Length: 188
Image (tube, rainbow, N blue to C red):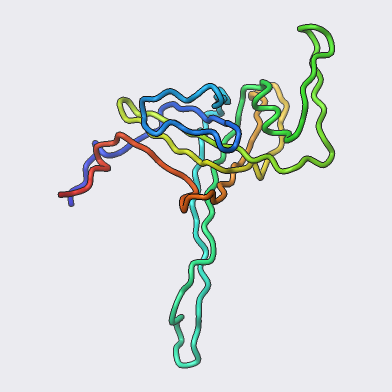
């Protein structure tokens, strides 16, 4: 098979969405994300990192210097991003179980950050585009499991760095990736 530069893709723009766990995601690439899906807005110019890894356990035998079998023991998938829009949806995602209240009508708001937040599972959507090519990744059940430091300074936007871990749902998949990329077409 020859190399084809037309199959090289970039994620030129996109969005991260959060919705309550159990929210139905669009089943195609043209249906808009429903009202329950909240767009987290601008992300840092690093974009989004997607990681997928597997762990295996080697079974060794006395009669062999190499493993005689490997058993898959875990599958992990994460999305990492830094939200640079400081708004209710990003702040309350970063600080789980936090509550924003209005202290003074339309001018002062208060964020109460709990000392012992509970688990906060979400449905997570990721959409990115490269010209006419659109991709959507849906994680039906995930949680923000890691948060980076919030840096405050004059030379960069304040960012909320978050890592989402995908969990297995009732389906055998932990995520679904949709694409209209013609390079995905199966060879005849």
